[in-house]
Image (tube, rainbow, N blue to C red; front, side, top):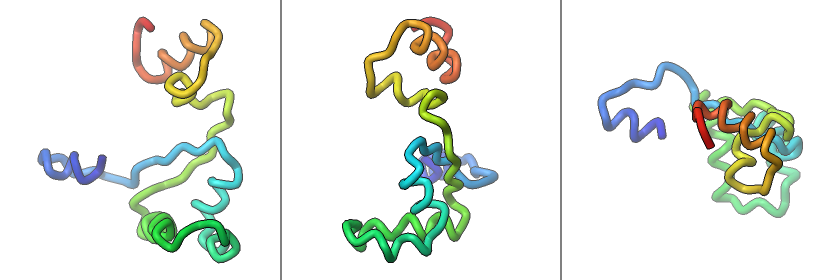
Length: 93
């Protein structure tokens, strides 16, 4: 997204926020020393360590109950759909 904005003439002022609701994924993203213990990760995934270190991505933990991306991946009850639509800036879902 940052590259696309740059090509369109906009300069991002800070790192892209990566909102993670998985504690293990957050730990690996935020603390690069854990990468060596993740034997199942292919070497091509080590890019995350580099982009976090360069402050191009800022991982933040978001509890599952507050994860608006769930609207795209799960079936939810109407109050949750309305809450997540509001979080994404949509007036009606």
